Image (cartoon, rainbow, N blue to C red):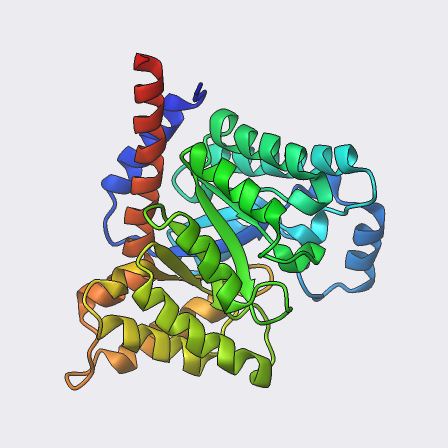
Amino acid sequence: MTLAPLDEIRARVHTLHERPGLVIDADTHVSDPDTLPDDLRRRMEETPYYFHGRPISAEELVAEMDAAGVDASLIWQNPSATPYDDDLDANAERLIAANRYIRDAGRSFPDRLLPAGWTDPKALGVDNAKQLARICVEEFGFCIVKMNPAQNAFSINHEMVAETVDHIVALGAIPAFHFGADTPYTPPEGFLSIARRHPNHPIIGVHMGGGGAGYVEGERHYQACRQMGIDQTNIFFIQSAKRDTHAESDFLAYAATPDAWRRIAVASDAPYGRQSWNFGGYRCMFDTLRRPEAVLSDEIIAGYMGDNFRRFLIDGWLRLLDLHQVSAER
C-alpha cells in the first residue's frame, strides 16, 4: 500500500487531537460550481431560492458554518450534481472529479472541512468502483468511502456491494452508506448484514434510517435502527434528515446504554438540510434534555455535537497510517 498524503493525514490527526469539544457536522455535500451540468445550472437560475439538493460550493458551506456555529464539517460529493449515463467509464471519470474537488476543498480549508470519499458499484461497475475507492484512500487520503444505494437504485444486499465493501475494508478505510427508509434499497436487515460481514471493523450508517422517509415507512426503520446500533457495536450512526422526535429518542436511548452514546453524532445533510436550522434545533433539544431529571450529561452532549465523530475520525486516519507503516516494513 502506498499512501501518498502521509503528512496531510498526520496534520489532520494532530489538529483533531488538539481540538476537543469541536462542533462537527458529520454529513454535508459540496460541489465544484465550475463543473455543474448545464441543465442543473438552468434549474438553479429558474429556481433561485431552493430545490432539493441544490448544490453549494465549499466556500458557501464554510459561510454557513460560520453562521451556524459549526467548527468543522465532513464533506463528500453531492449526488444531485454528478449525473450518470450508460457509460461506466465516463461515470467513473465524473465521480473521480467530484471526489478530487472534495480533496481540494479539504486542502483549502484544512481546519474546517474534513474530506471523505464516494463510490458506486452500479454506475461505475465493480472494477471501477473498487479502483475509485483505492484512489480515494491511497491518493486522496480519505479514511471513509461512501455508497448510496438509494441514489442509483441498487440493493444494499447485492453481491457487488459486498465485494466493494470488502475492498474498502482491505484498504483500511471505513465503508459508509446512505441508510434510510426513503427507498426500499437499504432495509435494516441489509445494513445489519453488511455490518456483521466485518464485525471488528467500523461501518457508518448515514441518516440512521431517515433520509427523507415518510411517517409510516420511517417508523419501523427508526425503531430497528435504534436497537441495531446499540447491539451491533461496530456501527456508527450519523443522525441527519431524521424526524426530531425520533432523533431525541435515539439520543436518550444511547445515553442510557453504557458506551453506546459514543457511537452517534449529529449532522445536517447540507444542502439537503439547512445547517443553521439543524444545529439550532440540536442545541435547543439538548438544552431541554440537560435538566437535572434528564439523562444527558455535558460530556454526552459534547460527544453528540462533535467529540464522538472527532475521535472516530482520529481512529480512522490512524488506522490508515498504521496500515501504511506495516506495509512499508514488509
